[in-house]
Figure (cartoon, rainbow, N blue to C red):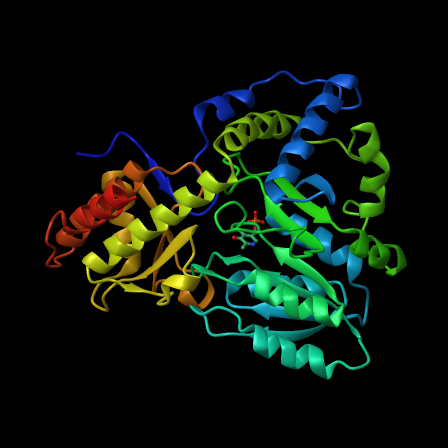
Amino acid sequence: MANLKQFLMIPGPTQVPENVALQGAHGMINHRSADFKKVFESVIAGVKELYLTKNDLFIFNSSGTGALEAAVSNIVGPGDKVVGVSIGNFGERFQKIAKAFGGEVIPLDFAWGTAADPKKLKEILDADTKKEIKAVLMTQNETSTGVVNDIKALAEVVRAHGALIVVDAVSGLLAEPLKVDEWGLDIVASGSQKAFMVPPGLGILSVSAKAWKVIETTKRHCYYFDLLQWKKFAPNGETPWTPALSLFFQMDEALKMLRAEGIDKILARHQLLKKAARSAARALGFGLLAEDDKCASPAVTAIVPPAEVDAEALRKLCRTKYGVTLAGGQGKLAGKIFRISHLGYIDQLDIISAFAAIEMAMSELGQKVVLGSSVKAIQEVLLKG
Ligand code: PLP
């Protein structure tokens, strides 16, 4: 039989709770009115609370990449030097954006499946005695490999140098701790379609006082994302251009759920599901791209199937027969791995269902599988809590 229900197990867009989805049907209102100001202020305050920041925060009509472009285009002009720390596909994208705006990018690349080494970053920054490096771009959670960087340690190294710390927290925020103010993170980007449990379309950016000084003196090439425009409108509870009203209503609803749950519990649930997914993958004899549990992502697990199993065939069977949508490999990992998400509105039983489907699909692909072995492994993790 074909499955009636769908299990969306990709690291964004993530599943949307019904009450959040329903807010998308809210009627339109004037975006320059007291009514919108109320929603705007509630959403900005709610996101700032989860960002653990008192910095300015802006919400654009864009996906996460738009927020990254907003970050870069406001601080990087032609010939400006920046370090781009990359541990995967999204780190590479950050480097490409900086190049697109004329930046002279110093790449600091690490093997896919591993985390960035703060010592290597220190070497580059120590050598910059003239302090020409303006900013360091880094990814909190590398979604393509299922690895998290130690942002606290990387930020400490950058703070000692004085460059701006710019973090892509698009898929990591709320899955892995990120203390924006405590760690002195100058610009932090995220998006609605990940741990916020909201459909795609809102790009989020926090900006520190130190970043504003750089923005004000940079020869910038931006218009839609000109942060000085956004800063002008924010005190009136407005955005310079028409906001995605439906998504604001949805974000307001999701924030009520997230604030009620609290950051600690949100982080704990991601950690628990990460443990469950890793334990299940190991029970089936799969490899894990992020071998080290410490830097493994609480948002997504990248799984390396046995050589004789075609990852794409496995994904296809899971989707068509069992309604379980898994993510494929990206960039040079395309066709070599598959990824299972535990980000956002994903529950313990979603993980159990997904692995039950993976087991059946593996069996149908002619692999020897002890049915129930990964499910048992998950149950054991969940029972320990
Ligand atoms: N950065 C990271 C770490 C991501 O995971 C993603 C999306 O998956 C992005 C950036 C880009 O976001 P978007 O696809 O919303 O533009």
